[in-house]
Image (spheres, rainbow, N blue to C red):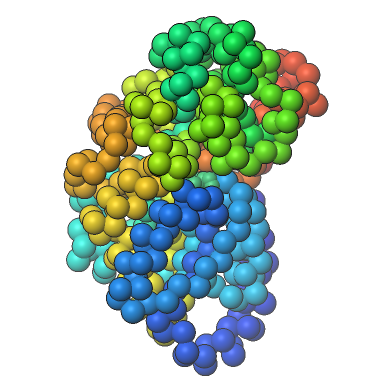
Length: 423
Ligand code: BGC
C-alpha cells in the first residue's frame, strides 16, 4: 500500500545520485542542522525554540526550512523536491506512514546505536515505534504525541451562555445552539481539507465508537467504510455546518484558534497544538479556556505524533543529526517542549509535574488508551493509513463539507471508491 507514494521518490533517485556526486565533497556544514517543518504559528515557533536553544548551547547552528500548512502536505511537497534533487535535510518533521515511505525508499539513516544507549525501546510505546523504526532500525524520533479528539472552549463565552461540558454529540449540538442564540459564532472552523478531516475523524469516533473507528479508519475495512454508521457520521458532519461562520473557507487553523481566544467564537475542534496558541497568548486552562475530549470520545485517543525523520546524511553531518535526536528525546526537552507545544511526551517516563490540567489529562488519557486498546492513529493526520489513502479521504470530506458531494449516501460511495483506488 505504500507503493503509490513511493513512486515519486524512486523517480527522483537517479537525479539524487548525480547531485550527491559533488555534494559529497562539501564538508563545511558539520555543526549545522537543517530542519524542514511546518511549525510556523506563534505557539509552534515558541516550542521549537526549546529544541533550537538546547542545541545552540551545544554549539550547533540551526538552518530552518519552514513550510506552513498543518498536516504538512505543503511541507511534504517541498521535501519531495529537495530529496529528488539530492538535497537531504538533516531531518524533517513527518507524520506516521510518510516516515515508512521514506524509509522504504532507502532515504533515512540509522539511529539504532543511539536508541540502544538511550533506552528508547523501553521508554517509547510500541504504537509509536511502529513509525519511528523500519526493518528493526530506528529511522526517526517521536518528538511528541498530539491527539485530535479535543474541543477548545472560551470560558467567558461558556459562562455567558450557561453551558456545561457536552458529553454526547447531541449535547454538543445543544451547546452550539445556545451560542447561536446568544449571537456568538458557535463553531470556529478553518475550511481547509485537513481541518475538516480532523473534525470528521472525531465525528466518526463519536458516532461509531472506538471499535468502529479502528475498523474503518485504521483497518480500512470496506464493510465499515460503507456502513450505515459511516452514513450517519456524514449526516452528523453535515449538521455541524450550520454552526460555522460565513468566512470559514480557507482559514488557517491558528487564526481559527484566535477566534476562540478572543471570544469571537465558542469552540474549536482541533488537535492539542491549539493549546499551544492559548499558552502563547498567556491564557490559562480552567480560567480562560476549557479543554474537553470531543463529545462522545472520552476514553479514546486519536493520535498523531510529530516524528523527526532522520535522513541518510553521510558522515560529515551525522554528529549534528545524532545531537538533534538525542536532545529531542531527552526527558528535559520532552517536558519543556511539550508544555509549550500543547502535546504530551512520547516517552512514558517523563513526569507530568510541569504540565497544566489539559496536559496532565492528555498524559493520563494516553496511558489509559495505550493500556486499554483505545489508542488509534488519526486518519486525517497520517497515522491511519498510507499517504495516498489519507489524501483520498481529505478530498472526499472536503467535497462533502463544501457541497460538491451532496448526500451522505454519495459521500460513502465516493469514500470507498477513493480509498480503493488509492490502495
Ligand atoms: C502537527 C502539529 C502542528 C499542526 C498544525 C500537525 O500536523 O502534528 O505539530 O502543530 O499540524 O501545524
